[in-house]
Image (cartoon, rainbow, N blue to C red; front, top):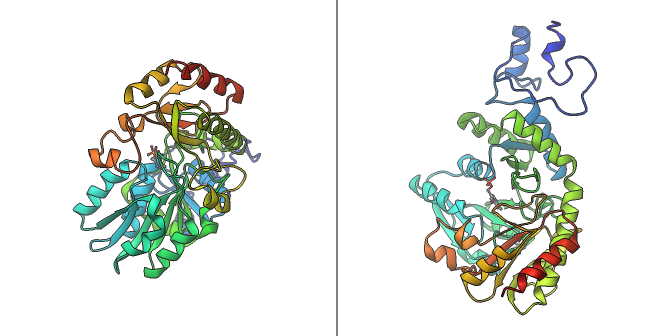
Length: 385
Ligand SMILES: Cc1ncc(COP(=O)(O)O)c(C=O)c1O
């Protein structure tokens, strides 16, 4: 074995492979003490131990950073791990964080832990983001938002929220999972960090969990410290699946948003459906703002109410033949769920119902199937209502 060449796992034999090799090693043999010094002094991007870094993961980080026009990116084990890393890295006891009710439900659980550590949490409704300034406190250190939001696809004006954050020098964190980097670049609109559940459209095939945080090199260093400390580095196999997903990401994102737009336009015209939320619809309250901060499409997710009752929504979902009854989003297949019964299940009742979600509200995530097949499926299932 040529030990010199073996020191570079990406090019072990000189020719660079088309697919980044899956480096499963947890630790690495030091070539000599000089190399150890160069790695520990940060002179070379070397590898020593998986919790620190991994070459397969690093390749994906570079790719996601490019997609978000960021200087760098940290990849970790899930979207919620990414969000939790952000909280752990920047907040301390006595700080206030402004959180939107309209974010993925697990933030509520994490907020209970933050409160246990002395962080104060203020919740605001995305429909009222224009009044966000009135909720600021001198100790507000961070604002966290999703746009479009989960599950009701509400739009929040990122540039406006940058101005709000600047009033007290707070960080602005934007979860870009619903929009995807194909259609929205939060860092260009004023966010300090952009967060992803890479489990969704970035991976895209329902076969991996990952999270991503993209931003400046300085922020990368701080977030890397947290990941290295708590140990939520993604495994190399999932990183390889993510890399594969990213190769087709633009094509998939375009098709998902075309399918979502077509389904939203169909649904909005049917008497059995109401409260259709999709930023691509001119009738959507967020359309004007979304048109100024999104490009080339409005993402793949929409929400609407089915009939009048939970039972109506269940009968409609049961009647679907092509569209899958499943949680998650951003996948090759079109997925539908009732958030009240799934993604919001573990929230207190007032949080499940207080901000526009009803028991008959469904969240529909467009896949990449033929549009006509999806529209036909909605049409035939509508007949049971
Ligand atoms: C917008 C958004 N952010 C974060 C998450 C959490 O991601 P993960 O399930 O990868 O932890 C989700 C999950 O559905 C989500 O929809």
